[in-house]
Image (cartoon, rainbow, N blue to C red; front, side, top):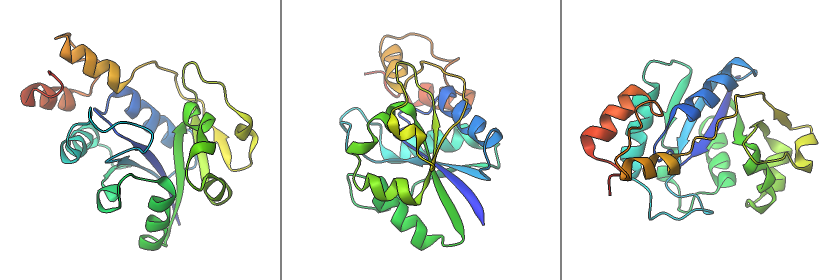
Length: 192
């Protein structure tokens, strides 16, 4: 049974930090693949700053096009909004009974995990691979048997920072994969 790490996010836009996390998880865990799940709407975030769903998915596809072990996933585009991880996991379990799904998340998400819908069910039934985030201390849930802390390089890069830099007409070419940088530039994404 293939073990799939689900890396959820807005990816608005996907950047090198996301790719380093995904690749490091593959190298330092027992995951066979990482699916980068583009979320149409995180219930804990505002939608007004989001690029169109299909455009964000295209950015992810371009970013990972040469990596067989990473997959762009649009599964939440076909589910009710806002997206709740518990609902997505139930749907994936039904659609892919031959795969074992795990979650990849930052320690900041683990800190707020008890605010998630059906968090107890998720924690009891799915493994969580957690990477450190700047300014976040791992909470009491870090000692749960279904939680594994994975040593990933800690970088303070965010999509919000990148969008703000683009709006200010600053060069972000080293924060994005080349193919993503070219597409964002050609399409004039995030300039206003």
